[in-house]
Amino acid sequence: MPHSHRIHLMQSDITKVNTDAIVNAANTSLLGGGGVDGAIHRAGGPAILAECRQIVARQGGCKTGEAVITTGGNLPASYVIHTVGPVWNGGHKNEPALLANCYRHSLELAEKHGIKTVAFPNISTGIYGYPKDQAAHIAVSTVQDFLQHHALPEQVTFVVFDQDNLSLYQRLLKKPD
Ligand code: AR6
Image 1: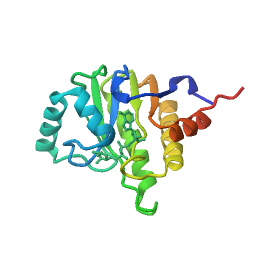
Image 2 (image 1 turned 120 degrees about the horizontal axis):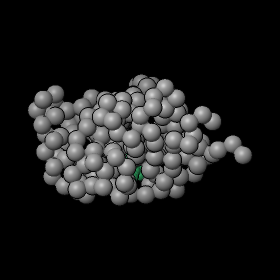
Image 3 (image 1 turned 60 degrees about the vertical axis):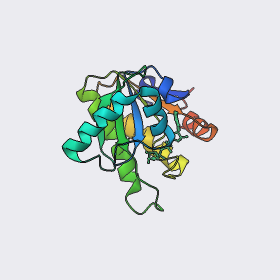
């Protein structure tokens, strides 16, 4: 599998992960919420929300599939890339393309900022209800495709929280013997 050495898997709380940037599964308001979004704002402190408010003032939030970048505040990561995953609505509302856009646009922002290491949570698979197996396929194939064509980021870590996602990603990222 090409570029497999640049993709890592870890089961962890993403707020503790020591990559240059972590990705947040945000919502279009950019003003916080539950799930991983709530955890990131709690652990990162008010500097993240302050920058989100500036972005909202400038461009009025963030559309589904798009991404914006802020400081990491008090997190080990220097940056947070906030992306907005699609709400699962049965699969015929362009959800797969929108989810792929989240990964691609987050990676493009990372590249633009010279970021070498990025960690992704399993976008849309919590409160937004995206089926975990379908989301994992899109996440892995989109990241693999991007890395084939770009030198940055050098490394991408998928940070899984639950056992289902751990098993799915282990299977998808299994290196050939
Ligand atoms: N570290 C890593 N992964 C986590 C953590 C954590 N600390 N906490 C949860 N997860 P979700 P969504 C996993 O619901 O589905 C928010 O209110 C979780 O197990 O956080 O994209 C936003 O403001 C799941 O696998 O995000 C939006 O309104 C994954 O992160 C909405 O939820 C994503 O679950 C976004 O929903």
